[in-house]
Length: 175
Figure 1: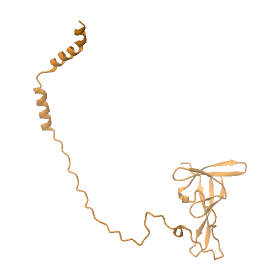
Figure 2: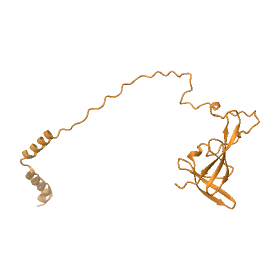
Figure 3: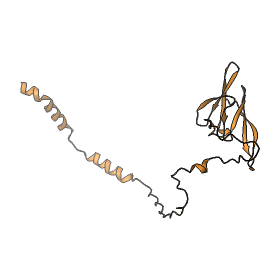
Figure 4: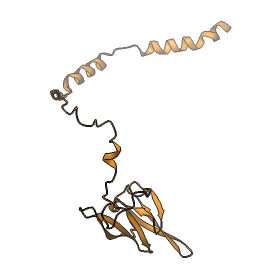
């Protein structure tokens, strides 16, 4: 009896599987007719473009993989003239790498008599800026912060070695 109980599941499974064997001709007929009726239409691949060799002829120019020399990136200002000049010894501010049209005023913060503007860059960072701080490409100094705008005085080169002041505003943007 123990011997029968030990192998009973195997015997039951084998009897069950023996009952599944039968005539499969209708199934095979269905598969062959379906394959014959439904042919997949795959578009041929496009011909790859021909490779054209390029001869590099700029050996004497600066490599694009090497940063430019310091002389090429520094601002050149003629200080010999007696006119309005930017302070070249001043350390650049954190928002002087953005043009003014990429900056938006988002609000203000106040403490006592001091008011700061919340200025957002085009990459989503928000900075607290107060009067006397610099922003924008043209040495823009914040002269006044109100609840509706930030007044910025920029120094614009006039082409003859001197600079002139231009006033710009960053309006409060509620977007």
